Image 1 (cartoon, rainbow, N blue to C red):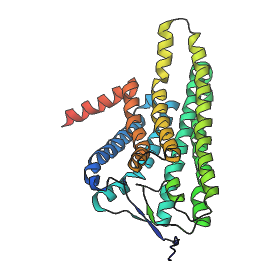
Image 2 (cartoon, one colour):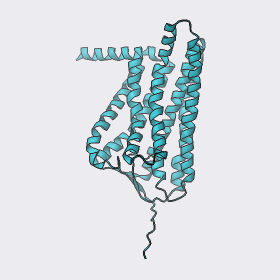
Image 3 (cartoon, rainbow, N blue to C red):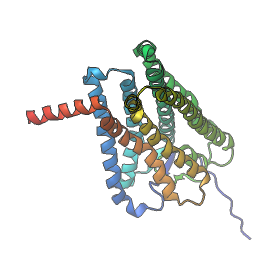
Image 4 (tube, rainbow, N blue to C red):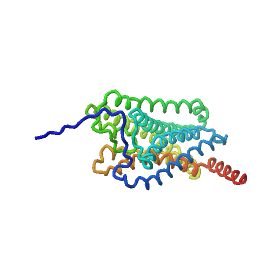
Length: 317
């Protein structure tokens, strides 16, 4: 009687499959994905350009918005070009170090983005609850420090993930990753034993960031709403809440897809693999697409400056 044993490999590279189960549709899927990526790049680059040239937007909230734009460009660019390469050319092969670098960028900058949303909530809290101290508390130096703190937190939290894989997980059941990018869980599940610590650490950090930041943001808005309720007129209340509208929309756009994707990926074992992968791609694409649109639609200064630039370009032509 023959007995077959699993053979563990020490691969120098991995093979990404794209959207598993939908390989025959890759060419067609490339159309919406490339379109969404183009919209994300144009939207975020436009946001950076408008804030740079419009001096009235040189305020804390818009500096944070620029940080979001840079983060969203990193998130989308770290995944989409490779995905489109798989769709168009079947170029799924990726070196081990390249895979770990992509993993670090995705998870690190998702963590940084959460930190920036927390900093924006603090900005809204000070602006509404302590308006007389807003300019003295949220100075340019403070804004820079908050952005740097969010970046350092992302590096410190996520840095150990690729290091654990590089040092402790040399052997894998297969070199084929059924995903479109090197997501942490998708890589770790292929390891031959010893992945428990890395898995638990990744899960813990994900929920720590998601829950703690969400609780802190919620607490800031509870205090904001208490202040707004105490305002004298309904018009004043609506106007004050209007300054928070873009931030609230951006928070929901970011947290809802990432929470749904994480929960389904870890606990939704009955969900078909293509759904897992599509959701994982949406959470790195949807915020970069919608954040510039939300702020352009809801922010009068950005909208007016953008229209002014478009009119100027039209006259030149």
